[in-house]
Image 1 (cartoon, one colour):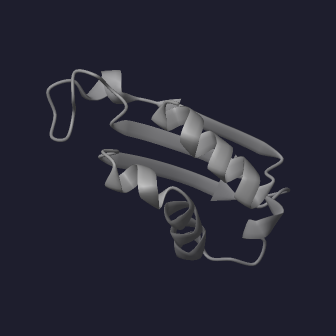
Image 2 (cartoon, helix red, strand yellow):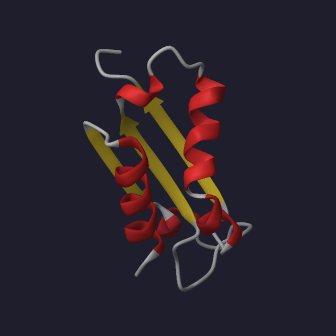
Length: 88
């Protein structure tokens, strides 16, 4: 299973999002710190879930980071997060 698949599965299970997009942007960072030729180092996550209602941006990011903590430890170098509640 790829990092993208693993993160997608975990986020779907933990948050039951109404919208989720996990984008591997590694190719955009070739030659930069943390980049590996094999890829799967730089990701962007767009997620919309009821679980984020009433939470600050920092709380939302902490929630996402906790869900994908294993992937971050296993070689994901950079993670950009856009997390919001439905209707925002």
